[in-house]
Image (cartoon, rainbow, N blue to C red; front, side, top):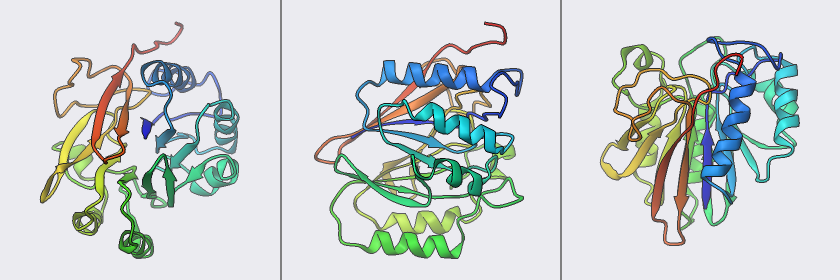
Length: 256
C-alpha cells in the first residue's frame, strides 16, 4: 500500500486569492503534481485537514472538481479550518470523509475527525472514541494506519501544544494495545515531525508539512528544507513493514 499524505492547503473560494502571502490553489496544484512525480502509482491520496480556509461551499466544490481527475481514491479529514457539513455535502460522494474505516491494498486506514466547532483545539469526543474502540476490537490481522488532523501528543512547540488534540491521551491509550497498528499520521503543525507511540517505540507518530507554508520547525528537516512545502509517502508491504518518506518541493511565490 502506497499512501500520499498532503495537508493544510488552506484553499479559498477565489482561485487566485491569497493567504499568508501565497496563492493556496497554485500551491495545491504544485503539490499534486510533485507528489505524483515523487510517489507515482500510489493507492490513495490522504488530505489531512484544514482544506478550506474560508470554509466556503465554493471552495469545497472547486476541490471536488479538481480531485475528480486525480487517479486514485481520496480520503479527507476535517481540520479546525473546515466546515464538516459543507465538506461532506460537496465531497461525500467522491471521497471517503472522516470518521470512516477504509480498507485498501491490504491495509486498514482509520480516519478520525478532530474538528470541534468554534475551537482551534481538536477533540474526538466520547461517541467517536467508542466507535474507534469497537473497530479496534474487531478481529482483523491487517496492518492498521490511523489518521487525524490534530497531533495527539505535545510536539515541543508551546503555540501548537496548546491547540493539539484535547483527548489525545485517550486515543493513544486505545491504540497502544492494538498489535496491528503501524503508524499514526497527522497534520495541523505545518512541519515535519517524528515521534513514537508511548510504550510502542516501533510505531511512529508522523506530522506532515503543509502544501502552502511552513511553521517551526521543532525538529531538523531530514532533507534540509524546512521552509519548503511538502507531504509524505507511507508504504506498507505484505508483511506489514512500514517505510515513510518526507517529500519536499520548491515553493510557488506570488506572481510566479
